[in-house]
Figure (cartoon, rainbow, N blue to C red):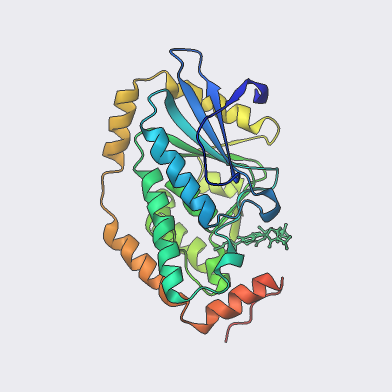
Length: 272
Ligand code: COA
């Protein structure tokens, strides 16, 4: 299947995104596959990736040949292990606010997109990775996938829509548990909670996801578009604003220093 993919011609600002298309075999219609390509950092999403991903999606919105988009991570370990913690090390609360709003802009763009966006989760989906997956319309996971919102272990809170969107998918109680425990769950538990739609073996994972996505690409693009608009019509702006205010505030508190520096030293944080 991989050899059937072609390059998608769009200049991103860095090579941390790989863009390929799968040809559906009718009317030049295609699925776009976006791979977060930062394997050494477990595909942690930094500012460049945030911006590039937004730019690609905005471009694809007007490309009538692309019927659906799959987002996945490079390598065999991670979908996205979160927002880039290293770049947050010296954040003050203003930097944190901006970072939160930029991430929220991306998840809002994904969530309100009028073509199906599918997260192909091939490993860790933590923090911002879980938030990006949660914003997608569908989530397909490989059997090695691990999910969680570990921000509280860093002394901060989820800032890219995690407190807004997770509860819509797995319910208030389950979302609260994940968000305040920072615990991780495997794909079986994610399937049980409804966090993922399907789980596939790791071997040929992307092919399995493409096969699934192909199955609804024959439906009316216009009807799919209007269905997605209608499903996602509720307005969350106030909740997003509260989240970014509180994310920003957490960087004023010493817990964020304790948590982030402990992660960078590969130690357990000791909050007071
Ligand atoms: N931001 C920046 N770098 C990250 C990262 C993140 N979110 N997640 C992993 N990395 C980096 C590690 O720092 C390490 O870099 P190094 O080789 O320069 O030390 C590299 O990716 C590999 O990660 P490592 O922790 O050595 O792998 P592991 O298999 O032991 O553990 C995880 C994997 C995912 C459990 C662990 O990396 C982790 O807990 N990551 C952070 C998850 C998180 O808190 N996300 C929310 C952020 S808001």
